[in-house]
Image (cartoon, rainbow, N blue to C red; front, side, top):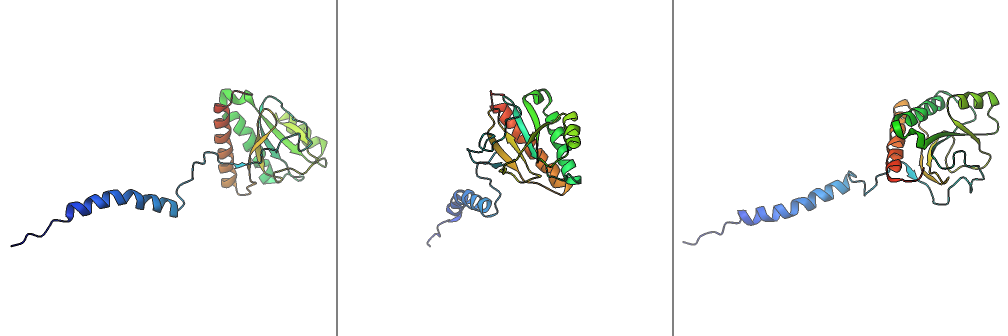
Length: 180
């Protein structure tokens, strides 16, 4: 009588070592892994700053949430401006380190600019071509370098999500930064 070797323990050991590889491959194939990305906005090229755009830095020494206002500010634009202001307020005790900035085209009326200033925004006229589209936003560091950009969203839920993403990024930048 010959005894059949028991292969069950060997199969279990092989499965235990193969399972993590299979799970990792599954994560990569289904795009569940974000490859070390911690920022939610789009990184801008290093050379993107106020000086290269021929725009005066409206708040040197402070972080800035920048919004490129379209010529005609409709409902989506007004919601973006409201969310930008709310983002600064949501920073709590760190809000004194951040300034909301609105870049306007020269065609925007003086009355609209005064209304925005009264709401607590810094207004800067932008004559040059911007690295972000009108209706989009960005984060600028205290030295005037533009760091991250966020695309324009027209649907209210997407606007809110973009605002949350921008807030998380600016909180992270403020936490890591000793400047501004």
